[in-house]
Length: 577
Image (cartoon, rainbow, N blue to C red; front, side, top):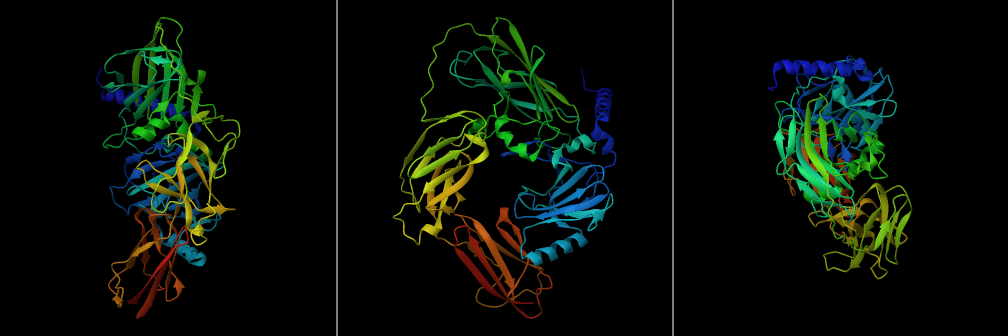
């Protein structure tokens, strides 16, 4: 049947009826969009991100900064945050209906707010600030211009990150449930199906390994490309790769809901309507984390790890495990929807395999950690401490150490499982400093871990009683290194040995980079007075926009930069304005 205009109208009528029975919709009529025109999204709510669920929607700004951002309803600015990473420049508005709206990655605020923030930054002598305000400071009316869109913080490109939260508990809610103008009658896409053996006694098509199924289909119906029936023996679970598509854009956004049924009996249900920030790390439990680390794509798995408390998981039967005991054919369906109830369905068949297979025991491991118990590894030179409740599930892993001749290394390399093992909460790893290391080196030591590219990345230089300790959520390789190299400061527009005439300029840009322990702090001054420089950490860029601190005639600009191991660099330049 073709997808006619009549069907579209019927579908949106169903959506309207569905939403009209929710409390959200009753209040949604009070909200206007944060930007003018149709909202095109480059990111959706609860989208799977690196280590967290996306807490809002990302609204496209045409690849540019400078678009007007408006208050969606009456209220007051309750918080202003400015940071070199994360949300960058962000505004929070509390509304009288029990909701808070959030606007992030801004370029700058409106004139009055911008002046207030800069005065506050100067009073604290800090670019990074977190300001909490009373109801009287900045009251706003619906439609007031509050900011200009940008690309600040950890943004991967110009856009507006927008959220709606429940004010009482700061819980992010799905903004698309508030009827904002988004064109979407495009169905989600299904890209992957994985079938996993739960243990060594489980087999999929006769093999005790993950079975990757090629997907075919389009529109509402998807199927297995090569064979629609899979034989299983023992306990298995499923993993579905999927994303949402929207009208007129090519972005792969997150979905709203997933239901998995066997013979119309639901075994798994996920609904992305809201989550607490304390739950966001459960993302690494609902996905197949090892596949994400090794192959860089994500699938939602039906297996429910025992320490997963994510409330967006509405229903799990038998911990998401499937075990067939008869010889009947069983129909499995994954039903995927976006917020506007556009639906795609993947259908395939499972049948019990009554053949006998040789069960090969899994490899022995050095350690078997239990998720609801305290676990530790204690040696003279290494400690790992994980308290009860930090792991998602029981884990097995190997541990070893060896010395490798790497530049600036000052310990063994400790192999703690691998990077495919992660936890819900941070745990402690400590490496002892060798007593034979000289006292001038010890303050410059730091712990590093190896990333997927094999590069050693700074973790911590927290030195306590001769041990360097870090808090981490990931297993992997760890070692101590020494950073004796100061940061690099580059300012090509300013002459090093002579005066620079800046009378035709509006700003000064300086690049600061530290490739080992990373930038810890920077102190810019003009004529011995602290000045405000915006810090764009993702681009290693400091920017001084000229203000009243710059005087006519001669000026002395100085910048001191310190890394996390205490190495310092500084420059001084003579300016004529």
